[in-house]
Each structure stands twice: as C-alpha cells, then as structure tokens.
Amino acid sequence: MGSKPEKPSDFKGGRTGNRIETTFTQQTLSTDKNGNASARITITSLKFFREIRDKVTLDFDSSREKDMNNPLGKLIGQSYTIEITPEGQVSRLIDASDARTAVMGKTTANQTAIQLLSEDIIKQRHSIPALPPTETDKLQTGDNWSNIKDFSFGMMGPKSYERIYTLQKIEGIGNHRTAVVQMEANPSVESAKEMHAENQTNPLSNMFDNIETYTGTLQLDLNEGKVTEYNEKLQTEWVIVDPTPEEGKIPSALKMKATRIYSMEKID
Image (cartoon, rainbow, N blue to C red; front, side, top):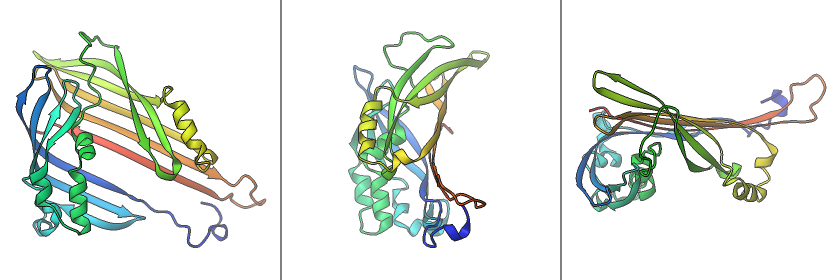
C-alpha cells in the first residue's frame, strides 16, 4: 500500500489459500471399556478450491459430473476408520489403506487427495475440541474450561492460543435441550516463552504490528449427546508502515492477513 511509484513493480498482493468442504457419514462400529469408539467414515461429497495469488490452481466439485474424471473424484464413496475418545478427539487413524490406494498417482490432484487422507488432516477434520474434559461431572451456565491450540504462519512464525469455552445457555423446546457454548481465545501464557524464543530466530515477525481475533461456537444436542454444530474462526493481521515517509506522500505499508476457519454441521 502507498504511493504507486513507491511500490516495487514485482511486489504484488493477492489471496492464497485452500477451501475444503466434505460431506461424510459416520457409523459407530464398536466401543471399548474406556468409552473410545471405533467409527467408519464414508465420504459422500467433496469440494476443493485452491488459489495462489488470486490464480485458481484447483477447483473440484463432486456435484459437477465432469469433475468426477479428476483423481479427487475417486475419494467419493471411499471409507476409513478412526478411533474417537469420549472427549471428542480422534486419538488415532485405524485404517485408510483402501482409500489411499484408490487415489494413488503422481498428479497434483492425486497428491492433494492423498494429503486429505493423511492422519493429521483426518484428526483435524473429525475432532471436536470444544467438548469439556470427561472428568467434569456437571456443568452449569457460566462454567468454563480451556485447551491450547498452536498454529504456524510460515515466515511470520508460530502462534499459540488458549481457547476458553463457556457454557452460555441451555435452550430447549419441550424435553429437547441444546447446550450453547461460546469460545474466545487469548495468546497462551504457558507457551509464550517458547513462542518468543522461536520468534527470536525470525526477526521479521517482530517488525510488524499484529491484530488478531479467535472465536467459536458449539451447539450440543443433550438428548442425543451429539454435536449439531461447531465452528471457529481465527483472523490475524500484520501491518508495517514506513516510519519515515516523505512529506506530502502516503506512507508505504505492507499488510498481510491470515484466516483459518473450521466448521462442522450435522445435516442428517
């Protein structure tokens, strides 16, 4: 940003990122004595959109018949098995071998499909971080609990947040009750020293002013014990302005923004 003559000709802005939308069924196969459940996940639809500096490099939608020739189309109907703890965390990927075999290949789309079946991505996709610890016997409106979430922002370094969940209210019509939980996050005190040490090796991040917000919502069906909706959104922005602009000119500035959104909704 700033006066046009002051901006390098090859220094251009643009949006870079991925947007993924997956619809799946979840079938509980068994539970053990500790309450851990084995569940089979079957992918029923998929949308994947990727752009690099405003240039679309991959646009797949399984609802478009012509897109089903794309290697990502082979994911539709594929299944994998996971283990879910009583706290709603995916503790391990039990098996995804058949699904991975179906999408093997060397193209970018093949590699994207394989990445979507990686253990880390599967854990992120199916874990519900907002559920309270199992040792919590009873919760009342206003009670809260927390956990830690780490992010990496490449050259801008890592960030760590303490996500604080508060039981805001219990809604209901008749005997059907829904718990509504709000989440707000703050920079993690526990990880502050570690993050500071890592940032010292990356002085670039210390040159920028930083503004950030991180919020979320959980709706839990208390009758069925199932999550009906969960979402969280992190927005962080870095800005640096020329401290010695020429008189009468708009000061040059660089602004970068990162957005991370996770949303899950029970539709059936």
